[in-house]
Amino acid sequence: MRNIKICDMTLREGVSKNMLFSFREKIDIAKELDRLMVDVIEVAPIENEKADTLLIKSIATAVKHSIVSAAVGNTVDSVELTWNAVSSAAKARLHVVLPVSVVQMEYICGIKAPAMLTLISDLVRKCREFTDEVEFTAVDATRADEKFLASVISAAVESGAKYITLSDTSGTMFPDEISAFIEKTVNSVPCMKDVEYTVQCSNELRMASACAISAVKIGAFSIKTTIKGVSTPTLDAVGHTIALRGESLGIESNINITELNTVVGKLIKQLKSRRSETSAFDNGVVEASADEVFADSDIDVTSFISLLEKMGYFLSEDDNMKVYEAFKSVASRKTKVSSKEIDSIVASSAQQVKPTYKLISYVINSGNVLTPTAHITIEKNGNRLCGLSAGDGPIDAAFLAIEKTFGHHFELDDFQIQSVTEGREAVGEAIVKLRNNGKLYSGIGTSTDIVGASIYAYINALNKIVHEEESF
Image 1 (spheres, rainbow, N blue to C red):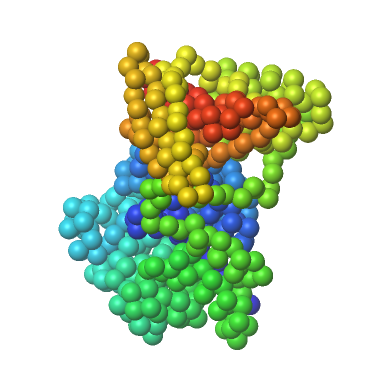
Image 2: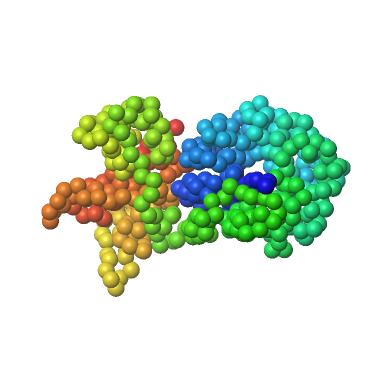
């Protein structure tokens, strides 16, 4: 039985398809794909250096079993930047993705064939300096000139590519035509027999899964999928096809078929076109994580900082030490400290700054027959700024009103509420975690009014973002 590798491109293709995943959603998608035992998880190239580098590093840390394949940009300098981001993965790969058809090379990239051939060779060679796990994808290969395609594949393999993908971008081929194309290409390029190759099938004719299986039948080593499969085979279709008919084809996969429907169903719900205009929450209501993180009381500072980074906090050396000292104080009274407690420690100990924005007043209108609204007044440098907004609930409305005073939306990564004291006048504590350029900023607020505590926490996190931006 041949083991067919499943390479999921959701996180890479989502960028080109303008799917608005939040930072947290991208991490969750990677974790779920890893749980399914997908062989390769592909991520998009770095565009925003700060945010995308942090994202790839976070995915690399979160993924335990799958290969994390990071697409490099179109310059040699982008290769080292990408490697620095993905190298912390247990299994890391660099991926060169470039077009080889005239229409894509000249009219989309503005590069002619000779220059493209040189660029591909240079990029693959540079990738090979860092790792032997290097893949080259020939985009729009089925419409490329046959001789040029052969020269490009040969150059990529000679430069160090270990994996070759031929992309049927136009998606106009039938399964038998895909088979014939692969067979002809492999026969005309002898070095193809020395590497693992596959075809990235398009779903324009709604035959992507059939084309992929056809490619596997004549020797392809892997299948490229996405969760929704707008223009590719879907992960669930490929997984179930191999499970049901794999024995007759002499193939199998590592996909956890018993979890496939549950995980794919969960992830599809996350794939939305845009954020709700009546909610500050990018991810909707998120259930508590099943893999709650705990820190032992005797954890050393290096391991603790690694834990913070796993949770999404990339702090300065000074803040790391402040948080660790506060953690040790809490841990002295118990054997384990939960991630929620660590969030509270970070919010109250790290990035303590002089507030740029100060809350003056807030008025919340809410009820079972009213659309919740919030009117927030904030002061900055002696000037008062007002925001008015409606929302799905009083806290949604309050956060959206703050956004209007500031004039910018930050990704709301997490929001927690807990009681600090007991009784009628109990004090509530709120923790708000905002993301800016991929970096996490945690704010804390306390009040006998839980909405007020939430507003204070949001402004606390906002002030940390503003202070860091103004310090550069």
